[in-house]
Picture 1 (cartoon, helix red, strand yellow):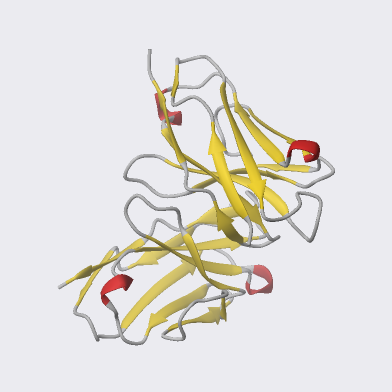
Picture 2 (cartoon, each protein chain N blue to C red):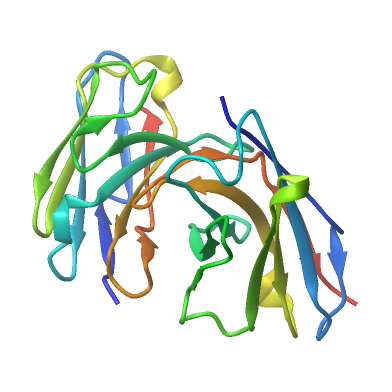
Length: 118
Length: 109
């Protein structure tokens, strides 16, 4: 069974870049029909999809995001990563990585809280 | 953008009762690409239903999904104590590729 684990700084200063990594175990990043996605949830609020990537690097991003987003993949490390630039307090959220089966997310990481504050 | 609206915002029920949750889309969801998730405090969302009506692996059969087009329903036939949580619907296929509804909280009456 797939397991996903987010890692990265819990505190980021305004205008800086938020960087998170998701490590996948129990399966291959390049196997199956999977994309790999990032979803976030501000405290007490709902879920927002940020973007997804497949093993070859094909990406899909949410065009509604105010902060520029970039997702990359490193199959040799079984990792995919998120970068969110020029962050503001509105980017404070729990960030989840998840396996994107094309039209739904079936396995999720536990999530990591990132606070944007000086 | 396909906007999902969930109702009610909060559903107060007792264990053993039937829960009916609604998810309405601002435009038709192609291919019935509609999923439901359960989220408990401090936990990640858990996939319950995909393709509007298919149960995910390990999900009890008291959970069922139905609907097509713009109107979808999640039904919990008999609420167990562990079912009190927030439920989100999610669509695939519009732009953005995925959007989620605002959630329905099922709490104990």
